[in-house]
Amino acid sequence: MFTGIVEEMGTIRAIRRGRSSAVLDIQAKTVLSDVHIGDSIAVNGVCLTVTDFSADGFSADVMHETLNRSSLAQLKNGSRVNLERAMAANGRFGGHIVAGHVDGVGTVTKLTQDDNAIWYTIRADAGILRYVVEKGSITIDGISLTVATVDSESFQISAIPHTVAVTVLKDRKPGDIVNLETDIIGKYVEKLLTAPQGEEKPASRITRDFLTQYGF
Image 1 (cartoon, helix red, strand yellow):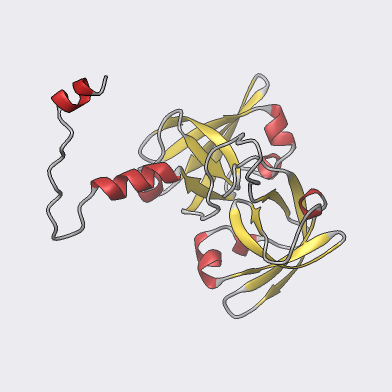
Image 2 (cartoon, rainbow, N blue to C red):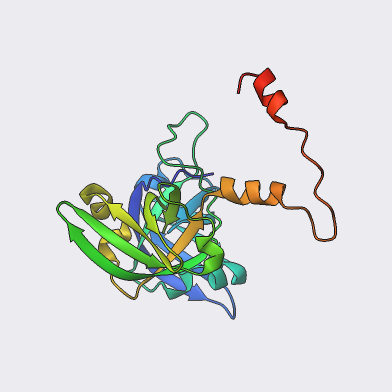
């Protein structure tokens, strides 16, 4: 599990591409302080497993499914990427629950300067936007951000200068593809409230009297 608080920006040093997979070699520093083979590191919001590491970088395999569902396929040598280690059990929860399992991608359509902040407008498919709510959380390229507005075609976030400066948001421009992960809680709630196809949803035992009895 991750929090969406980026620890550092790494740089793609090499990409070894297979027929439908890839191996990324990423230059890094901070995330290597206690790294082990098999550890999870989020790369632009995608949870990848460390397969090898050195004093100044690490390698990770990228599966066919991951390339299809994320923007990692568009990386090239020299690309900067957001990096975050999996959250330690004794760490601060500074962002929100991030699984590192990207739901899909969006497209940056507009950047607008607003005093010291920058507004980013992101176009996304309806299947992603259904889980995007105003003032809710969204992960963009592994960054935990707050949704400012949302409509039927896109949503907006407003980023402070610090967030832009220390993440790959500084590199994003209209037309760029970004990884999106919606709040996992919303997806679980939808699953629990939706009866499987062909099954009737059981009647709820929560009544007004029940809620009154327990102080609601």
